Figure 1: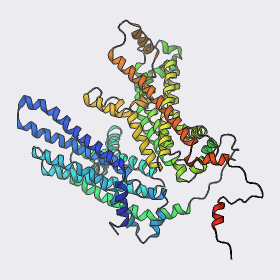
Figure 2 (figure 1 turned 180 degrees about the horizontal axis):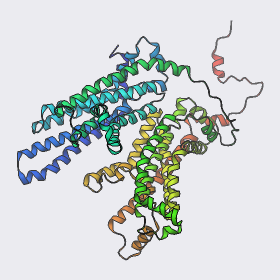
Figure 3 (figure 1 turned 90 degrees about the vertical axis):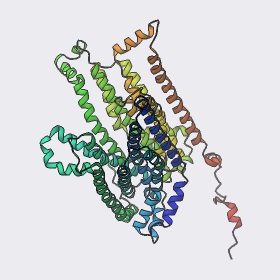
Figure 4 (figure 1 turned 180 degrees about the vertical axis):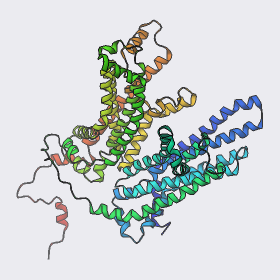
Length: 609
């Protein structure tokens, strides 16, 4: 039944999470920022013209930005909120009790979805006072308000359907959240990617597949937005309001189909997971444990997240294709032609020097490091949480293994499982040395910074994994901490004041991946920096600022990683109730002594009659 005990339990459980209150505060600050920046931008025009139409223009522009921000926020908060609806019950091992009750599959699923949808509804309700105030200023029609809220509701319904279906099929909530994000992004971007590829490579096919492309574009808000900015695509409806209504009519049946599939596959998926899989025969024998049991366990018995890794590798390949094309066009073809014709001696006399090729390698290394750090963060955030889900973490903490050995084994296991992701950064470093595009000192500094960032990300992920009750919360806490340490708040402030623009890679990648990338410098760049440092006037203020940020960031990252590593080791060396100390100091019982672990209980029992 709907609105039953499952709905009430989900509502109470969701209201007790402080993270949702933090998100609401951040969203309120974002809304205030949208209003403030719009007012500052329109204030100068109002002082010059002194016309009431400027007030109406301010209200319209602010409403459009508010509607876009509301859609983005809904797409961000729905996967982690809905993605654990069923997967959390699997990890807590409480789903069998729900399956054994008299509740139907649809009742369980819809109650959990309705209970967890209260948080997104609160975010939508927070914007209603702003819309009411902007409506008093003019410039906004009732049709636009209705279209904006209906579009947000239908788009959120599709995102909820995707997250619910994946939560039903996935074994862990972490996998469901990651897949929900990736499939939602694919739903928004894939129609535009197909359109651009067809226009660029096969323009003759556009007429044949246009009905299919029109359906894809009309079902996504990004496709509707592209029809506004590119008149050549044309609206498939008479007006913008009708276009949004067409999108809503396509999205709502799709959301209903996704929720129906989730309810249909809930019990079959549960029964299949309860039966389990047959163990696969091992091709090679397992070597002895040796003196490093944690590394041995991580190498041979750790459960790997193959779905998340394959998706990361697929995304890395998709990003690498345009980056490789950019590198080839940025003097890459000239360098390889010179190598083929004159060998390495010909690179020294190459005119003009391949400055663009080094810049392309830096951009490639930044993106490769971003994917590598994401893979390390995902694996380290699940390193301890998966052990806790499998009820094996207590067994590890009760052994005489020290905290240093546990940390070292876990980190080595994380690096070993993701060694394929490190192939592209290593290839870029080797290519920069072979082509003489970067100086060996710059390559050495870049490798050292990459190792430092990897250590920092692994420590943050492992600390969050130890402190969090499950893998999904550990992953969320890890990426929240990395977003702050990656400099996104500072970059957002610089973007507001106009210091940087979105054409730069800094707002997208942040500081962690770009520090190793921009350390990949050439010999002339090192000589120029040395000459500037030796001049009496010294570097410019912007040079001092960038240098201070670089060295300050290195100090912060290394200090934080060292502090987290020490904190983790101390917490592992002193488990709760000093169980390790008790086990180590307990003498072995003699052969004549009783082996009963609780003699007091035995003495309290009644004598047998």
